[in-house]
Length: 284
Image (cartoon, rainbow, N blue to C red):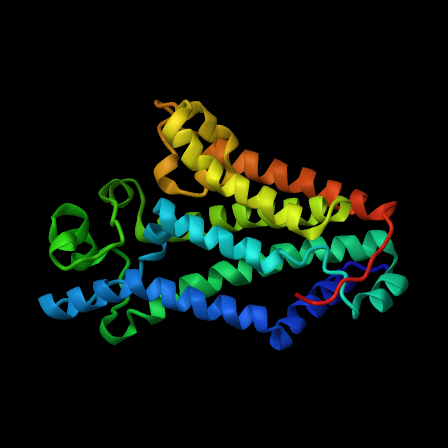
């Protein structure tokens, strides 16, 4: 089991187990209920004013601290059972060897994170389907919510940021938000994997949660420079400065930070498996 495609076999085995894991269905249901509280009022507003709404709401979901926090805590919930050593893993581990098995687990974290945020983005679009239209611009509904107080009048909780609309096209904001969220979520998953390899499974989730709440500490007590060291903060377009004229990180810095961190943590994750005693856990 030494060829590159077989890493996908190891990762795919974990993905297939989602179908029989009640935790995944609970997570999906909670996400749908949570997202509807923010997206439903936008749908109702568009129907009330008689204008269809464009599908570009995902960048504003990940741009809002509270929503972003819940989405990232969902990643912690998704990967809290790392290092994924359930009763079905010993056979794969013996056949593939520790290093190849660990690479497969890292790949699983990356694929699982991508599927998670694609699910969130897809649900945000599907919820608008009754009054949706496909457009390459932000559309009248999102533009109105960004530039007026109509959101308060119609009790819309989701903040539609006008700065984001000025700095990015809808497609740019959507793709960049999706990529940055994937990077931050992958980092959280790898941190959980590494820490859980050395300590018990609760510690990894606690540390990952602390990384998520670090942004709130920066906002309340620390300098804006510290956003350069907060992966969850840099997954929000509101915390990035394309001009580089403020203390906020630039997009270039954020991408370099994310990619270098993912490479470093991936290597560390593989090394953490090589010489550790393997212990089988029941499925969470």
